[in-house]
Length: 294
Ligand code: NDP
Image (cartoon, rainbow, N blue to C red):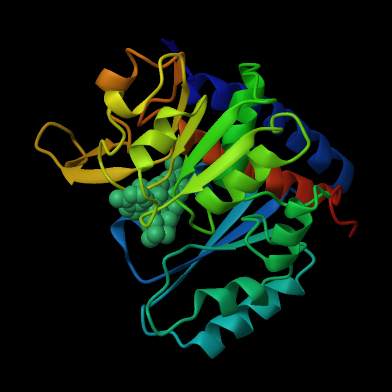
């Protein structure tokens, strides 16, 4: 088994981003600027946003976290988004999900100017991604592509099985792996909670991407000898063993599956760190205007 080491790869790519950000700042007199809106005080969301902000600082970006109480109305939120859309000093905008029930996430996603949509969730970006045109790719699948690329994992002609079909991970991942690009050119099967014979589907895969949200869902008996296994899952459990009071588990039973896999991502230390890199790269591209000219 070889480790797809998110710590190592993310540190390396962040060095490149830092250098490029410094060049951008030297040229324009300002730093790439990411704004993150956080509504309410969901523990997981707070941790993710704090980490995104911290990483922005690390690579020399400006970052702003705008926080709202859980009772903000959809109209108020959209008004703020429109203000940011028109602010030339802001390059990227993300609204951390999940949102409270009274706010429709699709309306929020579509309110964001697609040229600042560094999460890559806007239908314009999703449509362009599907057509293999320049766009912001959702951060988690983007990070996974960067990881596969770093380790020169051969994907062309391979059978990939994506478990989970969410808008933010499973669905875009399946599109990206099937595209005519590198990494890509896989024969992709996308599976979900209604899939029959899911074990057999996964067992046939050369590349497995698990994005389910269930601790240790993928067991060794479901994985083919020599498969590449990408574990997106982040499942938190309370723990007395850690300082933070919780422990993270993936969707893959790492201990057993790693005995069969040729390559595998750990949790933590795998896809989560690469997701941040995907977001930082998108923000840098937004600032430079290389995907959508300013
Ligand atoms: P969602 O809950 O939006 O989607 C989960 C998907 O898994 C759904 O498509 C669902 O199917 C499918 N699923 C659930 N149960 C089963 C089952 N028993 N068999 C087969 N499929 C099943 O989750 P996300 O995609 O947002 O996230 C998935 C995991 O990845 C979570 O643990 C999340 O925390 C983590 N995550 C990690 C990130 C990172 O940076 N590492 C970033 C984003 C997410 P159906 O559609 O039929 O309901």
